Image 1 (tube, helix red, strand yellow):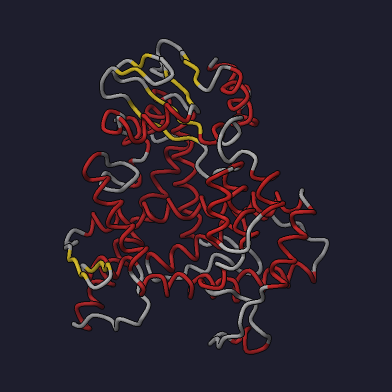
Image 2: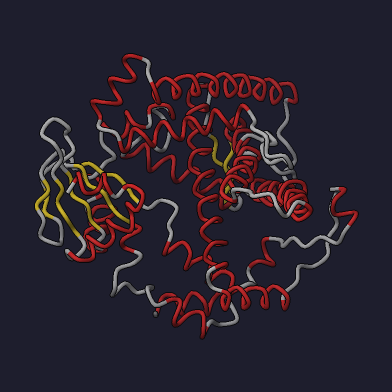
Length: 420
């Protein structure tokens, strides 16, 4: 099956989904004897529940994933397993969901990039109708700027009217591409390239060194700034994740917990992992969303009608672009009224999940609910892309049911998704 998959690289996920659905959701794949690429691929919900929850500790990321994600560091959430992974996830969830100062910054950063990034670029393109632009490139720049602002409190300004390359964003692109190649190229081949300093591995090493220099200098500067100020920021002031971690503060209601990040290497790993997790996933989701809207004019018209019926309240903005025109940006609480838009985003994520494949590694021999025997050290690939297309899934009829009978509140939306 491996040679066939390689031939289908352009159409990889669709081809794999077709094969998985045909074979009941799980297939076993044998690679060349020298490649160590024997694996099991599954989209069976029962198997996925077993791997991700029921027998979670038997399915870590595995040693190969630590090597693939080596540029992101050994301490980041992409590489760690077990208790370390659970701790990092809980810490980030607590900070992102419960820290009001961070949520303020998320809204502020997104609004800033829309007003001073997306809108000017769209205006420029409207004045130059003959110009062709890569929408994915625009959204990659948008999300890179926003994620840098929310994680670091730094605006790299990669989203500009001329769409010129920014060295920092270019370095991150090279890191991203290098890690992707490690996923699809046989392990022995990319390790040989790394040893000899050739091809993609050479570009990856150079980009990682360049990005690391920026991060370490930035972290050191931020530490000095916080020490100089000697007091924590005001509770009502927005805060980025790096500052919050250096301050050692995470909030949940009235409870304040402290954790010390004295090691710049730990902070570096945390930051670059968050940038990697947030940048491409959001950009990919946005591209698929607008592509889906363009191919479904009936749905697009309903989204536009809902937006027209629920305009955002006028609010003050410090940005000059908003002083020149009325702001059309929604606040967090206002977005909750846009039930139909919520449904279209949910359906986009089902059909075109930003993380179509998840990789696991069997620590011990096991038997999946489907009856497939998993030998110790076998690679497991979970196809979220295929699972979203399987008949019988509770949400596969969302276009037919949800879009025609959507409720007027988020509560009703939740019930429709849950029941259908």
